Image 1 (tube, rainbow, N blue to C red):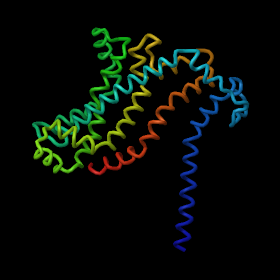
Image 2 (cartoon, rainbow, N blue to C red):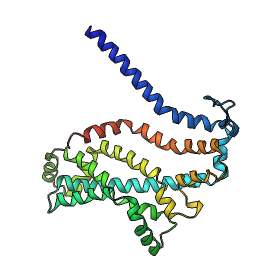
Image 3 (tube, rainbow, N blue to C red):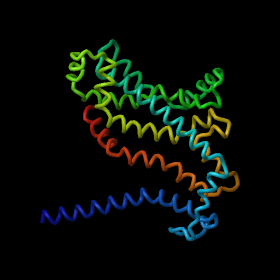
Image 4 (cartoon, rainbow, N blue to C red):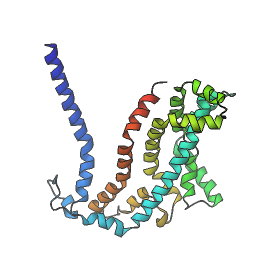
Length: 277
């Protein structure tokens, strides 16, 4: 009876998981299917699950109607710059908070975490005024500076990971004549690759989908990022949904590729980061 009940429970569990997966995947499938439809087919009732006929010209229109390629390059440049700086500064701060002893360490760490509670809407106007006086409006530096050098979530996540590393590593490094920078770059960084990979994905996704700051600071279309360029496909009286869905499919492709390539490190990083609370 116990064996049978376990089998029934396992079957029910898998059915529920499959149903949840279908519910989560279906919106992405619908987006991709719409990208291969004619414009009139979007408004058909009942809607067709499979596009008939298949239309590939929507993807060509994405690159022809607006400077989409330029926006793609802009997003790649801004996101990679921000993510690399965030990983470096966050890991260095996390190492200091986890392994170094200095006055008011816990208080400073709490103040860093407290900045996560400040809504973006509170700092938008002061930030805009500062960048306006500095002449940074309508430049990519206005998107890089506010986020690259301050990433409280990254500091918190990496600190939890580094706290799980044994102190004997630092002691061995000191015996070998390593300074604190040497201990950090030669010993600590190689050991926190899983956490850095996880943080890379979180930071990449957050900055890749950023819309508020680009809308606030950028005015010239040639400097637009992908979220802003996607917004240009939406018209006041008419929206070509197949073209818009084709653009969305292209935008999410880098995120999917990055996640698939680093999936092993993401799971390992999240699991190991949660050991110490």
